[in-house]
Length: 501
Figure 1 (cartoon, one colour):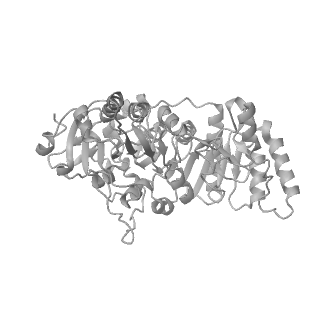
Figure 2: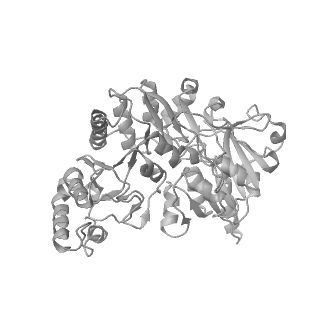
Figure 3: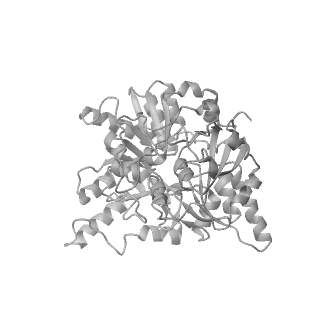
């Protein structure tokens, strides 16, 4: 096979089923994969079968699993359904795994994406027994060409006792040269600054490095990434995108942003994609991006000549856009760079570059506390992902959501958030289709009135105003952030009891 040209590693080629035998019950496993890209395509199914066989024979087989972010149904999903995943971090999106977490079958550690690699390096999670990493090719000298995601791959290769490599022929070999893998961050007290002063500046190497003696198996695969489709932008998402782009124009007019803006970060989802589409159709030129995921809309920006460069750690493309990218990958060289995620999401760089962060939320309360992970305070959806990395350190941040959900049964603007991932101190701008609330420099009571006026749905605005007015009247000594503690979560309780807030 021409993708494996290292003599030493070519001798270790085997099946996914045989490779799975190198993973034992109770092992801590680091896998590649970030938002459905670059995850192993062979080992997860083999591990699921191994788990099923163990159960049928009265034995146990389960692992702790750490990745870059989410994987896919044919990775997280099949292993969760087989009961193989005992513990998971830092992010997930598969329905079967989500169910296992919310029913208590799987322990889940929701972690900032910039934190996990260093936390394993610090030894907080125990010894990494096995790394399972997808690549596009293996060179004669043993260097690995990364595929569609870099994530935490290099750290897993460095820390693991044993390494299993999957070489996926679906991933273009022409990925070579589109990555920047940096390993010089270090640990305290020898931690070093990251000398990135431009969103496209390269400080590492295009390759992953591995100790060939640790490699126990090499597996051939030929299968696509998850490539989830995006919904067409509806009127709600278009309205939110319009608000954001108009706000950016306002910031330029106020002299707080240059005409080319600062580097853009957008979380995964249809609303973020709609914002990118709006930017492609706008007057903005010479844009850059320093983000974690490249979506369809960002490729559209490049194709439109609006975006000069995009730095990320992974792709998250629709099937059609992925096929187009793979066929035309040479056209994007010199304009797209994939980094390891402890660099793509590093607070130092985000703050230095002045990133503009756009992320989705589940709900926000009137004071600006944001819930981006949980339904009704208890059931996790996906995880905090990189939103915290970017939000707290951004020059300008937006949290975006429709004003209602479940056909109006839920208001996403509430008296008090049922779970808080981003405190009021980190939230700058809240956006719904109703409008945009600029909370910068406002005291809590001013924030509350702004959020109610600008972002609440008409069906809930009067009730929010009533709550706020009564909270102020009832708290003569609590005027800084007035609340009615007996009612603060009553909207959520009402939904659980009656199916509507």
